[in-house]
Image (tube, helix red, strand yellow):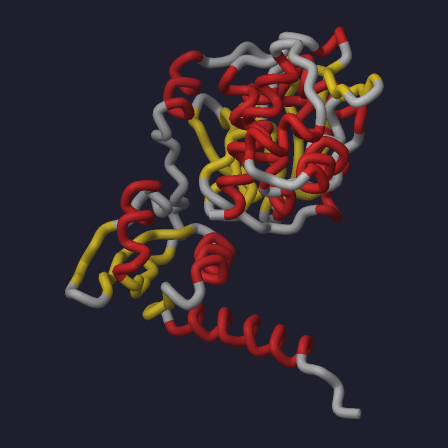
Length: 295
């Protein structure tokens, strides 16, 4: 996929920069089989938040940022930069903080996504700083006040979640539904057991009011779905030579709607009907908006 190819290229470039290498546009273009224009866009647009300097024809990273990232950091940042729609517009100051504090402390990106959250940029930055600096946060969620210890912002199937310690239990909250976010002065110590749950991907994404969804998926996408574990709690309930049907449980409609939009025409919602109708309305409205106006 194009996003994966871009992410891999950015990862290599970041590794070179992090190791103190200097290079020209022509050298990278030859290495990746790309044009110099593509490499220039990588350095000036995709990696705009990195302190990259140019001396003559050569590009390198500023000394204060040299060697700051490990391989996992580079992988995560390449993912972020390669799939720009995952993130709101980030400020240089914020990215510098992330660079200096290890990006994988705050973020985890699982599969491709496209939830647009530019209108909550300030909350995204505020929450990320709280995670990095171990500050307790307070917010309203579904009209209930929550005071939690924030552990990580996770993008799963296109939806951003806050993963937090709530009274000794690891819970997830849909980021876009968080309101009146405040950072408290109180600090907390990380719970090693909860960290292990996150690292092992043992997070319970399903709330008590979860709904069951059935999806029909074309076999041409089967290998990717199974290999990438696109749906963490997916169970195959039927399969034949043309397609397979899976059952999964979700807490928020956007989890499946975003996924299906990304995989059209290889996937469709079989049930529940209200979710299928919701997606159809979204697609029909999009078609209406994009149809050319008769002259």
